[in-house]
Image (cartoon, rainbow, N blue to C red; front, side, top):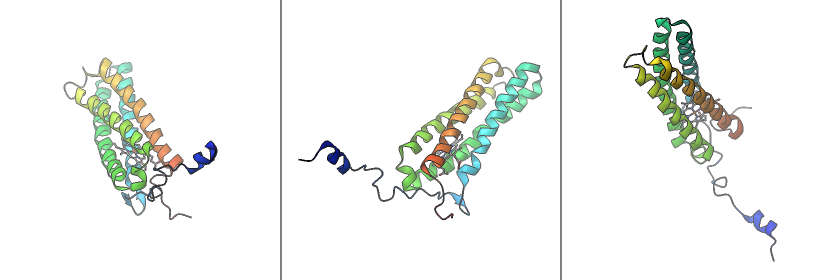
Length: 170
Ligand code: HEM
């Protein structure tokens, strides 16, 4: 009679045994350089700029910082959308990326970030100075935390799962 250990050896993981599981190279790329990786720096950096400008406005009361913050929040959202489109096309079109649960976790985290970025910008369109304290500042703080989380998680996809990398390097 087969032991429990033998039976365990016979178990097959339907995800990793998928013949296309290892096909996770980036398709949305320029000369092999993934476009998503190029774009994500913008929403991450601009989210930090908007948060910083909010803090400076809180500290100095100078209207310049409230104006800088609405531009930072708006551009973070728009560049985040562009990054989201490239990431989503990659996720749906590359079988090895689509098959990994971690890719879908990243999608959910990133969509949450984009919703907060949109709210942060949209809220300010009805009076960017009045919107800033306290809600604008709070939304900026929340988006900065979420951007760090989404960015860290995206990095895990690449460094831990080798998603979106090229197999042609030496
Ligand atoms: C909304 C849908 C999104 C999807 C479906 C998505 C999907 C992906 C995928 C498949 C990768 C692996 C690398 C590649 O194939 O290019 C990745 C990497 C990454 N993503 Fe996203 N992503 C999305 C949005 C975002 C956003 C808004 C951010 C900004 C925080 C972000 C940050 C990152 C980072 C930092 C990496 C690692 C890039 C690298 O080091 O090469 N992603 N994402």
